Image (tube, rainbow, N blue to C red; front, side):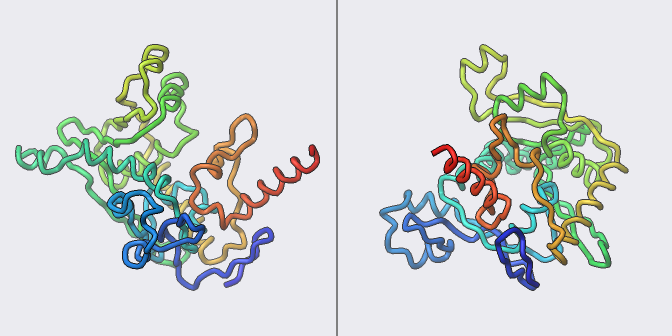
Length: 300
């Protein structure tokens, strides 16, 4: 299926063929992880090879199978990520996997089992739910971090910046991020008996100055508001409808909103600039760059 968005002509694969495939090489060529491992003869120009090995993880897209975190992303990001291979730098990959390192430190199932507490502390348990969306069988998958049966508390372990913690403390407003929805999806579909949802957050830009000025410590616990089951399940169904429709016919693919772009007061799309893995495919990113270049040309 062909699709023209903006001025970029894309040939949509008959089956999704996207996902993270490799690194952006120092010689300005995209290389698969397999190439880096077996064929590269320029490793001296890259970070230490053992580090690269720890960062290599192909993300293969399975048709009609979506993760909880995936469906909460903007439809445009989901579509391009699922259909077109993308690449990253080792530096960006380190930050992408920083949360996994935090999990490895804090969630050790071996220790729990040794104490015979695995029935009380349910660590990184997965779940799946089947849907029929527009006549298409669709599977939703998720994996929560920790559920404590004795306290009926669902926990998520995240790395956050101090301003996020400060904003939540001040406003109690979770609407500007997907964390509340993500955690409530886990609760609704996996642990409906949960009475509390909490985030155990490592404040990754913590400093003594921040602690003194804002009272924010290196690790903080945030209470996440519980949402009604029917609201969550209606939202999940609608999101799946959006992604399934876009996969079948991307002509109706909408642009990311200012909120989804995390625009700052200068009008800069922070998500695109520093966090979006598929911006090179995105006509909206191209339009933004063209507008910036036009402004520079007019002022020069």
